[in-house]
Image (cartoon, rainbow, N blue to C red; front, side, top):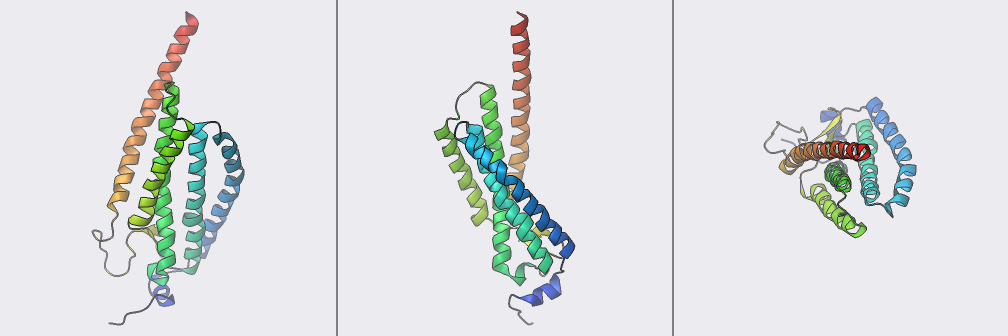
Length: 215
């Protein structure tokens, strides 16, 4: 059998150029990045005073990087019809960033809802210094997924990102990212639990305020 080096042969054999979807992905990403610019400035000014805005600012930065990878660079790969073996390093880098930013946004969303829950409970735990420390911990979590777990790989023919590069026979056991699966399960369960708690506390506070006003 012939071993082919990375290059256009892999695109011809396994890829497919997707100009319409690719340009749409790039255009959408550019629009989102432009809209994020004034939002980030506003969040930066507020983040100096209020801890929740500091978390939202970091979430905005993560989203900006995620959109760059998962929308703009992804669109470029679709236009060119790339698969993993066309340009392994570039496809790998885009996939690492895309996966890492998703997991980083997930854990920081949990941090944000925890922050709001503590505020409703009048528990002044999230000082500026503590918030910065928590953001450092969530950043370590994000960088772990970015660099130390299998990335998602763009496949232009399938118009998506997958752990399996779709080169040769499919192997679900080989091309899997169990930490990513655990992250997704954690986020679903923890988000549901925290938001239910948030709603319960909010309703209880409203009932308490109504009773206080009546008395």
